[in-house]
Length: 312
Image (tube, rainbow, N blue to C red; front, side):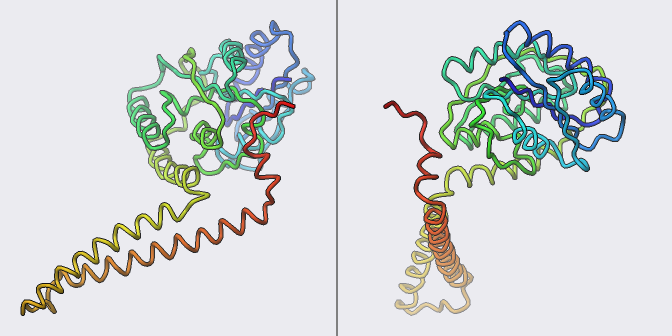
């Protein structure tokens, strides 16, 4: 089964049109499929439109959230309720073209675990395209996963990629990065992007600011979750070493008869050593907590988490 997860908010006029396009794109494949609509606290008639759609089609499932929790929560809810071996995400505003889904699925069959759409000709205002390009460039450099369009809503996954993935805040932007850190193979495919005809965009510059902060969270979790001492200990050693060099220099000056008691450099040297020790201690404590977590989680679960394939 192929599960199509559609998060939406106030897209009453797009719901039926989107289903018709999904049906036209997926029925020729000859595979069973379902549409999982997640109503993220719509205040218009979206839920009523979804109810009518559900009544007329057996493969439509509708989940209504109590309020607007954000796209990350809507996607996580859709992933938890998707029954397919393959999961496709698409936004509910009709800007993503459902006709591209078969191409994404074909790319997935080449051995990839995640295929992300790449809007090569993006039909959005310049004020959204420029921050998006900067965001994608920075994300690629920081995370090590170079994709042109990290935040494209049109993506295809193998189910094991998204099941159990914790999404909150703006982390839905970094699903490819989270999957990459877990060892899954990700790639991208150019897709058609269309003008918005109904509703309005809810994305602003402030979301990119929050996204950069979440990028730091994702990078820390992905790179240093199992070795926090490498980060905190490294910072501690660098700061402590600089502080010791400064204090050694002041000690030599003192031995030569110079007064150092009122030098700001003395305060700086002591501060660097103290902060360095604090960072190093924080790294050791984090290592202890990580070790206890790994032991409590059990070796079998951890091993299964990282196994890709077993031939026997």
